[in-house]
Image 1: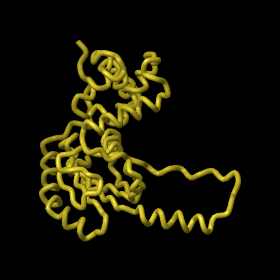
Image 2: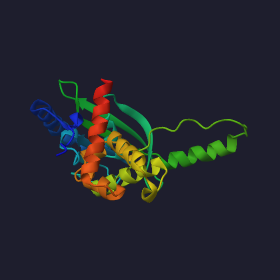
Image 3: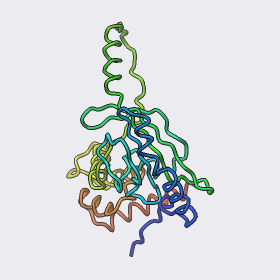
Length: 236
């Protein structure tokens, strides 16, 4: 029988959970007021990372259509999986309808050093971006051969765990560049590796969903994850 691989990022101590609860109790009540203070068009979201995947503990000034009890973004999920501890400040994000935002993610750490909560600020800068494009167009000159800049981190705002998992899974499959029906083991292993890196398996029912989409058994997905865990342990 294949055992489910241990995911260290998902394990929180009692003390870490208590610290997260303390942060939520102190910061949560001021989230709506903070959103009003940063108005207009600023969303403030407090995530309790120990409650993964239902991390949203408080939200104010809703722009992204999410609610308390909702999931993190795909970027938040990936940062969680990678053990991100540093703040992410002033990065660009975009909603499916084209609304552009400037976002920041501020982490709260337990005494152990592990992030247990995250305060996210999402400011709608669509109008400012449009004004910037108009000004850039009026002042631009053609410079052949100039390479575009490196894109900043982007994230997707899902209003449910189902939409989040579907989005992460579809992007991992697209990244391989081979239709599922033509995939061989090496491709499906690559998709599983990408999903693991993105934190996909922190979501409920993720193994079953990945197995269904890739046309393999749950046993096969667990085998891939165990192989990945073995590779990770071998690098330590």
